[in-house]
Length: 77
View 1 (cartoon, rainbow, N blue to C red):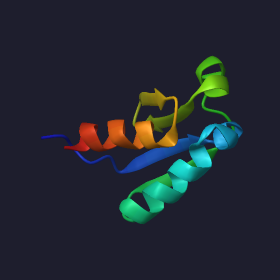
View 2 (cartoon, rainbow, N blue to C red):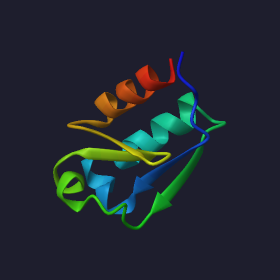
View 3 (tube, one colour):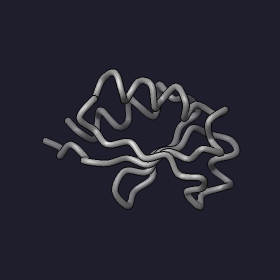
View 4 (spheres, one colour):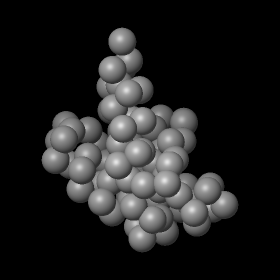
């Protein structure tokens, strides 16, 4: 069984690639989860082409915010 992360970071530069929708989904599904919006997460190559989130010191990325959310949920189960 996975551990629920206390905090996730989202890249503001990734807003158009799905981070905005991901932030809304996390707020709705996990209101206790702290979400921090950063100007840059330092993964620009991935960030330009995929939705990206930082969980602890790990990165989760996928083609859509739904896929990132699915990976995050799987990690927490």
